[in-house]
Length: 273
Image (cartoon, rainbow, N blue to C red; front, side, top):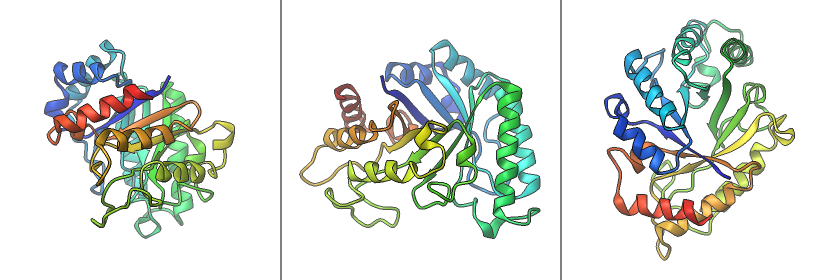
């Protein structure tokens, strides 16, 4: 059975409602990774603790796991503040701490460490302490262009789960059109990302466990239906064993940018595989 997950990036006031979690449950979502801070520098928590407590309570009542997702930066004080803050949030009932290692996790942002490698060792150590103290999972997610998504990984090798962001969309990050049958199109994109992720030390042996991040937006290619785009990408992603996927993001399926046709096509694809 596929473990179906969703990154949650809707406003806290929206997420902290029981109806929101009813909809996630009805869609078959089993894991909700809540983006609790932003890509901006520093530990800038978006949720009041009471809001997050309510969210986690609603999730538990509906048999949905909650993961706390944060954006670390290689700065000693910021990492320490984040780790301490995440400890408090995990005590509310979340099952895991996921770090999204992207734009801020680069050598040019290092402060208080001799190198990015030293910062990575410290982050991995902090995650390890939190994991064992609070009996939770440690996770990393990043895109295929980042060094943590391959043989040069340092944090990804130390966690329980690695989530490969293998998004196939009609337009790339620069707004250029992506051809259906290109390397970045549905199916090919996921197959290549999985192969790359398997070069991370430990993935081939099952630790970290490999999961695949899929796109829930910009799925309309000429000559192909929305359902076909979702289905082809999902079938390729299910090559990870056990099958485990997480979609970016909630705002496209249940939030402010939802479109009935897109949601219906996504649901049909999920049911078809």
